[in-house]
Image (tube, rainbow, N blue to C red; front, side, top):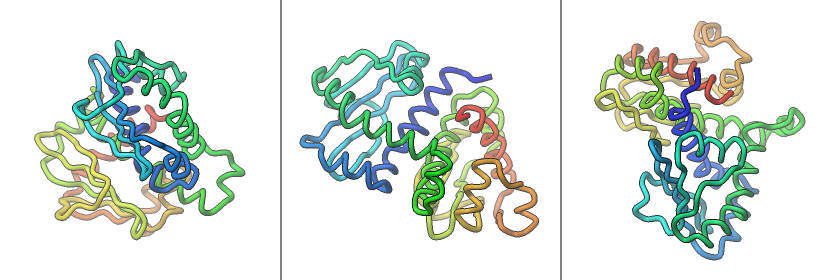
Length: 254
């Protein structure tokens, strides 16, 4: 069962949250950003749900919780309404910087989200290009990373796993390519798109091809662990809890 409030957090922190990474990794997205003439800090505020501001400049995108530093804002009456923005391109109600909000939403923002969709839901032919294949894999990792914490904090089933997770950092990485950290404090998860200085548990994938196979369900986690291509270290119970939440992530992102 998909919970609409939890889905709104997945969409905010997982899907839209990955715009930061898209603008850093993808040449098409970089070009869109380069054409931004005036910085826009666009806030999406969801009643009974998340509230985050996305700061867009020529240099890319940065996400920030809350609306304190926004100059454009769109309000949504419920998590369901916000999910309609992601799934059906239905906008909310502009409540600050109305002209700026609509202009940016219909222009650069739409171009960026369209590109995000192309990268995350690629055609088979597109994946034949090695550079695109690798970008798709890295972007999928960042979406998943945001979604794990979103569900750990809001989804009723995932919260059971979170409740059994001790404090500390859980690090997940593709060596030399990308590292994300789930920082746990009092059973609350926070995703950090960087390595931990002192991880309490680590999960490492041998290479980007393995990560792609795991993300798409094409390889067996158990088999790859037996081959030594997935390395676990530290407090394994923390990783077990993350893996249970990952099962929920696949349902929400299906």
